[in-house]
Length: 74
Image (cartoon, rainbow, N blue to C red; front, side, top):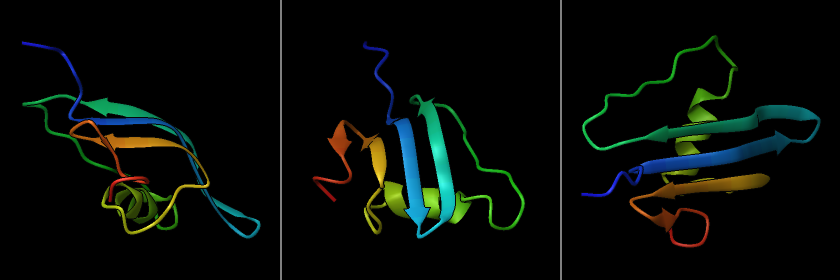
C-alpha cells in the first residue's frame, strides 16, 4: 500500500485582476482522511474547489486529484 495523496495541491495561486484569491495554497489529503475548508467570505474556498473540480484554471501551481492534473485533465 502506497502513501500517495488522493488530493495533492502545491503552490496554488489564483488571481482575478489585482485580487489574489489563492496565494501559495499547499495541502495533501490521503485516503481515509476527512478534510474541509474554513475561512471568511472572500478567503478563496470556492475558488480552490472550482480549481480542484477543473472548472477554473490556476494562475500558478498544481492540483492533482487521484493522480491526475486537474488543469490538463479536467
